[in-house]
Image (cartoon, rainbow, N blue to C red; front, side, top):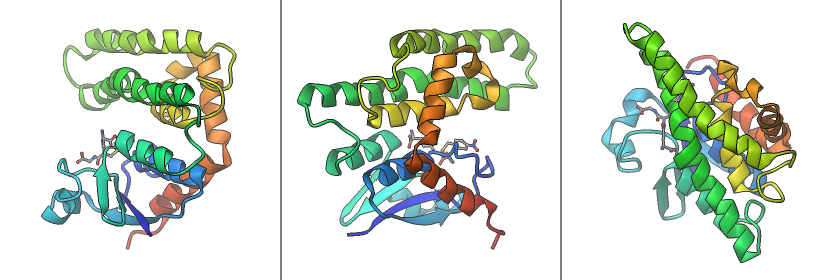
Length: 215
Ligand code: GTB
């Protein structure tokens, strides 16, 4: 049984770990499953062979035996569901950890993505300066209650879980904005995630791809 994921041949972030293959690598490292990586160019992502794996022509994808799936939520859930280490055994605790995965993807990530898009794509628009604070407010609208809920706990619900893996992955995207520093417990939460040996291995693996000479 071989697990193969796809990742950018060259990530636009130059290896900062922000492309979504990092969260899949991290999950696989947490559960101790070896994996192979097939690197794809932006052009190859839109060609039929890749579109058969990912209808939207994106990375990452995940293949294991006859199974081919996409969407990091589904991939990380599949890994957590099949291999021990990322979801509790207790049914209620497991349901709560899965809830945090969905909260990360459906509730916290959208305004963070919107902020990233505004900064990247809308800077030259005449309404940029007026809109930016509105978008930032929506991010604060998610971070403030998340910070309150986390309090001084290490993780969102008991031991580290796939819910934390996904939430930390989502919050990492805010690092460059400085917004995270306004919530010291969230900044410390993200730092705890990054300090995990499995995260470090995942980060280093994607960095190695992006630092390798172009070939
Ligand atoms: N909802 C999907 C999932 O979670 O799997 C989203 C997948 C997705 O957005 N994939 C991106 C992609 O393939 C790469 S991760 N984009 C190419 C395309 O759509 O044509 C998003 C990403 C890209 C780059 C950076 N960066 O350089 O900072 C960060 C995140």
